[in-house]
Image (cartoon, rainbow, N blue to C red):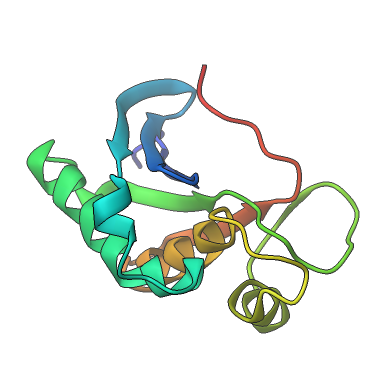
Amino acid sequence: MDENIRILAINPGSTSTKIAVYENTRAVFLKTIRHTTEELAPFDKITDQYEFRKKMIYQQLQKAEIRMDLIRAVVGRGGLVKPISSGVYEVNDAMKADLIDSSLGEHASNLGGLIADDIARNLTNARLLLPTRWWWMS
């Protein structure tokens, strides 16, 4: 059995999306995808950027020749969800509703759990996680 666990981390920000792939604790791929004002202008709400950012993530992973079949966990940056204790959670329908509805506010991080959920659902044996206190690559 392969002991090397690959983790895809997604961190959407206001003008960029940071992605990383870790093998155990070692970063094997780090990328900041910049988004211009012109690229983001057509979107009325931040959640409307969902497909645009997801496509950009897949393009960068493909360009870097990242094997998606080796990913065992997908982590999306928190977002504005109803209050819960700090920790790491598997994304559920209630969290996704909070992120989509943006009832607690609009922030690019709301896309983290949504995009991670979509990607994880398309991978065999991958788990989806959402930290409520964000850590990121140094």
